[in-house]
Amino acid sequence: MEERILTCIGCPQGCQLKIKLDGKKVLGMEGNNCKVGEKYGAKEVVSPERTVTSTVRLDSRRLRRLPVRTKTDIPKDKMAECMKELNCLEAHVPVHRGDIILKDVAGTGVDVIATRDAEE
Ligand code: SF4
Image (cartoon, rainbow, N blue to C red):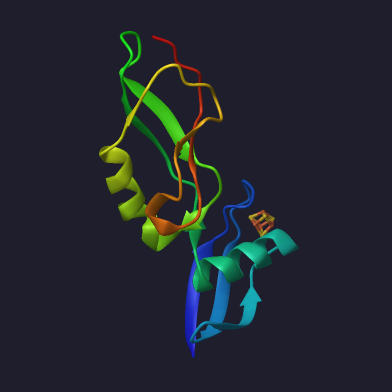
């Protein structure tokens, strides 16, 4: 049996979660003040995910980099591959907030979208 200690990021209280694990099975949890913390802690120790926010090159005279993010969370172990793909990418104006800039980043099935408009 393994024990992991995490800080919950569900709200500013930052509860310290003590999670007992057997492999990938959560046996118990202490320290969470609500169900959000329970859900976060269980997901974080079994299959952690994150939303990636970054920028990509843009062929605009006014704006050199376009802010982007993954549409939803992706597995944490795919973040480096995601960043590598974004570093090789150039977006083309005009771009509208929410436009898909890259489909299926790092084979996750998740698209990367623009988070602002950009004109020439
Ligand atoms: S367990 Fe609940 S109260 Fe505690 S930090 Fe997480 S969300 Fe906030």
